Structure formats: structure tokens, C-alpha cells
Length: 85
Image (tube, rainbow, N blue to C red; front, top):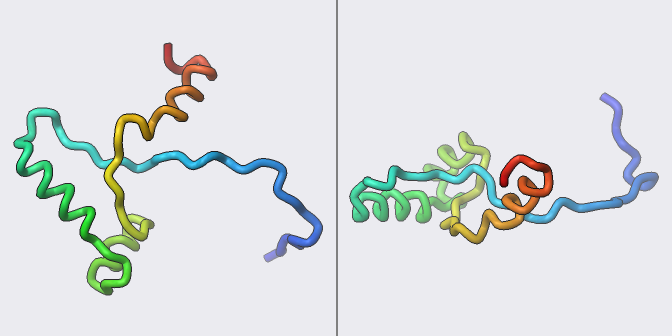
């Protein structure tokens, strides 16, 4: 395989951070059950070999709780691209 000579290239732009791969629950799901499911995801730790096996399958090192405002940048980009009104 050919390798890129990194001494001959430079960064000209960096994509801003964004959220992706969000897990959601139905709105009518019992709130207690919803929180227990969220807690199970949030307690997964990559330094635990048993947890790591699952996290590796999902190609992640852990989960964080998402909030509506986390989508603001993506929403603005979609509006600018004419994908949302």
C-alpha cells in the first residue's frame, strides 16, 4: 500500500465537532425504564475488558447523554443546504 508523506501536506480545514449515532427511545416508554437503559449505556467503560468487547462492536469507546442543543450545528447546516425548512 502507498503511504502519504505527511511532511508534504497540511490541514486546510477541520470539521467542527458534531454528535452522531444517537440511541433513542419511544416517547411512551416508561421513564424509569428509559433511565435504566441510559444508565446501562453510560456506565460502560472501555478499560473494562468485558465492556470493551461490546464497545468495540459499536466502534466506540463510550457513550455520553445527548441533548437537543447538541444538534444545533447539524440543523443549521441542513437548513443552509436546503434539506430542512
